[in-house]
Amino acid sequence: RGPIEENAEHRANAALWLCYEESMYHSALQHSLALCRDFSMGGLKCYEAASTLLLQVLPVEFWKWLEALKFEGSHADVNRMDMMENDTKAFMASASEIEDWREWYEFQDSIRKWISLCGVIQTDVGPDRPGGSSVSVSNAQSLRHTGEKLMDQALGLLTRKWLQTQDLPDDHVESSDLSVFLTCSAVEKPAGHEGRGFAGGAVVEGFRLGVLESALNEALQSEGGHYAASVKAAGEADKFEVSLCSAKGAAEGDGPMAANQVDLEAAAYIIGWAIKGNLSKDLQDIGLNVQHLDCGSHHGMSRFICRQICMSKLVLQCIYIRQVLSSLPGADPGSSAGQNLVQMIVGGNGSSADLTHYLSPFQVQELVLMEREATINEIGSRQ
Image 1 (cartoon, rainbow, N blue to C red):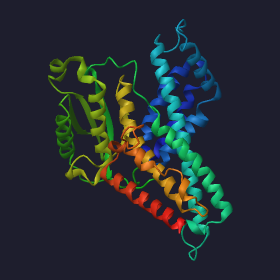
Image 2 (cartoon, rainbow, N blue to C red):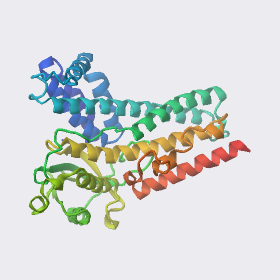
Image 3 (cartoon, rainbow, N blue to C red):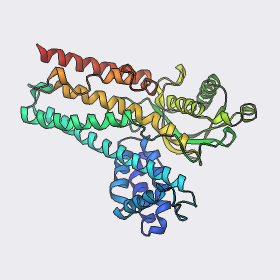
């Protein structure tokens, strides 16, 4: 109960109760996955809580157990009966996802510290020496070295199949079996590149649930009408529940293909647009602060929705790193990290997919402004 930002640390530490015996590690794995998904849609406190969960609460023995079962599960002649309700494929998918989340939150922890250090160093130069060009050579070298490593990590997450959804054990789930529930509150649309999510205390009072429900169903209908949404008040003040399930007749009319990857991802995009405040003109200044995500046994849908939120944060973090690096003294404009980043984001280099569909118009504006500043910095360093 209460805002997710207020109880995130408690929820993370409570997972310790599932880590005392190896026989409980399966439960710890599933519980940790649910927390990582929820925390990915929260703000700074949620991200800190996720780091606590993955780096402190889950013991070394848990990760050794995971690696051991992954090794056995990867061999075709072995099917450990105690893996996860006798389902090796489900265990391997869960193991892969928890490792993806650990990589994600480790990166978020590193970039959060780097951004904080950038702020401290640039503040220390004083009002008479504004801007990154006032940073000392030694500090600039340190920031550049760490920033370039972070850029490499970020590009790796962007270009490989992080939180992939192929070959999951729930690939066979039909449209009629899909149920998605999100516990939310309406808040002012988030802004900024830090990935901190929504501002605290920005809850929108008097939010009309019918407006959101109509906008969701209109968008879903435009994508084929396989799913229908409903929005109803939850038990706590300012909270409501968004649910997504098969539209009547969709499963009968379209058969199992109604839940294929394209349809599921399209529905996830729509949910992502609602979360980012980009669903309709009536909702363009209002986002959703997700308190809890539940897709039942359909882990693929959970991953689609989480990717919608995380990838847009990651794109903006990449361009912010580029902007900072370009402002540091001693920068070589000809080899600036991330110089072709925008081209990669729009899929212009032919070797990567277009990532702009993850971004809301507001986020596109943020990207353009930061890229513009980075380009100006590079032009200035040539002169």
